[in-house]
Length: 136
Image (tube, rainbow, N blue to C red; front, side, top):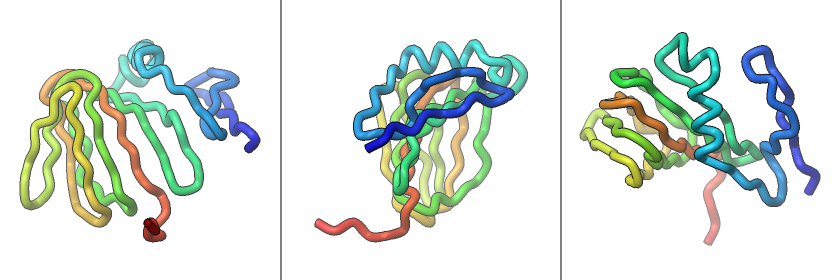
């Protein structure tokens, strides 16, 4: 498989970061440091970097300042959230869960949800981007 390399943007001038390939290594602490050194982190309540994206799967590292909220959303695919730093409240219409560092959750598609950072937090959001059913 040919590696897909991310192109530089106005916001992020990185070069040669592989976003898709047969094997992609992701250095979470280095990316967290990068996120927290970028302009959006200093000028808004969040910053994020897509660390892997291919047909059927997307993984995004998201950092939120304390009290930052991610508005209600419905994922088209299965998703998981794994907290690396801090604490967030993940809420659906039916329940709310506090997630701290080293905790995670999984959620089926089509469920309305939102996220609130209780403290400065970093988490990995993994979403399937294909609505095809997985076959055992």
